Length: 186
Image (cartoon, rainbow, N blue to C red; front, side, top):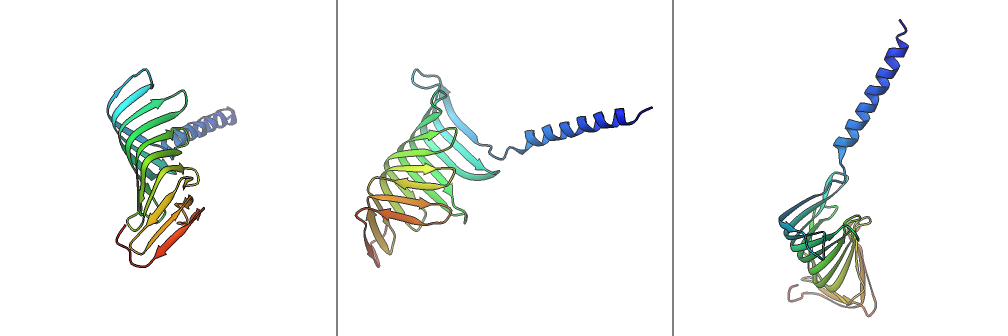
C-alpha cells in the first residue's frame, strides 16, 4: 500500500480546512450596527430611526456612532445620518466626541462628512466649525470652513484645519488668530 497517495491528499485537505476556518473566524474589521426601527423608502434602500454603530479596526473598537435617524443607499454606498454623536478613540484611549446636525458616511471606507453645528470635544479642548471631514484610513479630521479651538487657556481661530488623531498635531491656516492665558471656559 502506497501511504504517500493517502497521506498527502489528506494533509492537503486538512490544511485547506484549517485555512478556511481561520479566515472565517478572524473578522478583524468587523463592524456592528443596531437600529430601533427600519423601513424601505423611495429615497433609500433602508431608513432607520435610532441607530447605534460600532466600527472596528484590526479587531479593536475604533469609533461608535449614535444617531436619531439614518438612510442607507447601496447604490452610492452612503449613509445619510441625522443628529449624530460619534465617539472616536484616540491612540491613548481618550474619547473624542464629535456631534453634528447631519452627516454622510461612506459605508465602504467609513469616511465621513459632517455638517451643521459641528463640535469636537476631547474634554480639554473644544473645536467648532460648520463642516468636518473625517478620513478613517489615516484618522485625520479636517475642515475648510472657519474653525475655532478653545480651552481654559487658549482661544484660536483659522480658516482651515487638519488634525491627526494619531499624533495629536493640529495645523491651522488662513487668518490664524489666537489668545493664550486664562479664558472664560470653553
